[in-house]
Length: 295
Image (cartoon, rainbow, N blue to C red; front, side):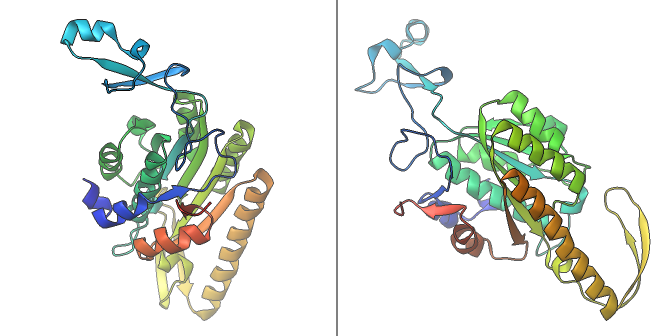
């Protein structure tokens, strides 16, 4: 499952990286954002086998009576960060062959999700546009990659609705990473209002294909909107491309104004970029990832 999204060598290298936080959880352990405390925790999450050094009061004696083996309960305390990955699976993300926007988004989500898990975060993953997968709590890397691999593109998605659902399921979410082409400006603005109102630390991975950033070709074309099927006849020529690039810059500007207003980071990403360069050059330069050794 893992190798379908990311090469094992990349994941091994990512184990040495952590997400950069402006507001990290307090009293975190070395190399992790959370504080796993036995005895003082507030939320039960799982069982694990008893090992030497565990507090005896954490043993689940009912399970011992039933199975004849010692297990202890694991808990999370309020200092553990909960991170949400929100991946846009709308039809507009189903674009490109060698540089498919949706697959690139899933790869980045898998990589950043692995860093969150390596760092001890509680991870929630949402595929915007797939209601049945509106928010899954993920505890391990294979489950994360399996969930992402099953994504289907081609839906109409509202990021705001999926964010609300995820927050209803996991109200302790503190960090949000969105992977989308951000074409629905009204939806983006509404989502950012929620982000600010809930005090989330948010990063927008703004993913566009090379053809969207710098289109080419000349002639008469009929453009069909992939989400609402609206049709527009256009004549592509040098003048049209200049107009397009100007409007694209205006589009960036509108999003950036919203991001500045609500205190959100936007990172523009090209879906044709090599995934290794994305993880180990572009995202560290953008202030999203850092090697563990750097403090």
